[in-house]
Image 1 (cartoon, rainbow, N blue to C red):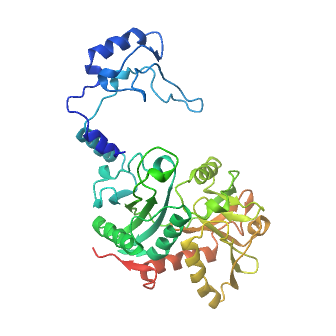
Image 2 (image 1 turned 180 degrees about the vertical axis):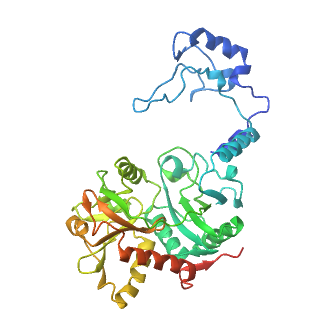
Image 3 (image 1 turned 60 degrees about the horizontal axis):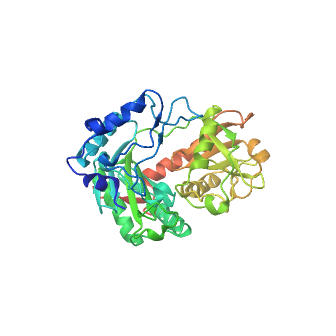
Length: 404
């Protein structure tokens, strides 16, 4: 199945909107005053709209959502208000939409294996609607930070997405080295020196079936995101999530299936918190919706839950390595990855969230329990400084230069 834009390109130039077709308008007019149901006798054949058996559409209902204040479709708007667009018209509307929706983040470049190239036009940064990642969630992704013209921990994140792809049974469109070159070239084309690179591997486009057997070629997508927002060290509140945690088979894969993560984050925001913490099946501390969790115990030991049943955080692992410097300086007594109980976590001296998006974010309250003295912990703040310093001047193993 061709992509959306390719499909629109094949529309005949003479195609009219419904409002330009008097036959359709006459048919619709007879029913527009009394009901939101269009007669089963109306034929849309003049517009080229058929059901799967090429019979006239029997009935169209305009439904509202019981969970929202607004209807899914404006029942007062004439159906004829929806235009049929040419490919160029659709692209122009995409451009306008992008221009009116600019936020803190800017999308500077995108690579797509579908068109085998890089674009710097945000309106062209699209994914085919029939990609199995879109309609079946059969895709994995990862991220690498861009700092001062270097990609931070690119190889570590690349290794993880390849593991995720293997676990998701997604074949690779290219070998590892070619994927790596494409990612670096995409950042180079973007001219971005501070931001992030996000990339996806999917089963690829084909059809709308459940099985990916019809997908002829897996796909690679990558987007460079510029974000000048500084990393925040202000302490935050977290709650315990009531949203069920993913089973280990899925929690250890960085897939695009993030509905539990989104609902968990929304639950936190609805309760005036920054994030919600998941507990595992045994009631032990697991992770946040898109970050790992760590603690400083009463014995001044940095504790982090085991990665066996949760996502293996690249940033978290790097923080564990950098924390050894604090052990040598006597600011920590040790670094330990093990099971952590909720009671132990809430009674710790410090708590922090760790991930590529937040780096190290101090936690000052969990549910109703104030953590430590209720202020940002000194170890968390030092670790934040160490990770930022590592991003700016760390060894070649974690910093890959981008040839602009």
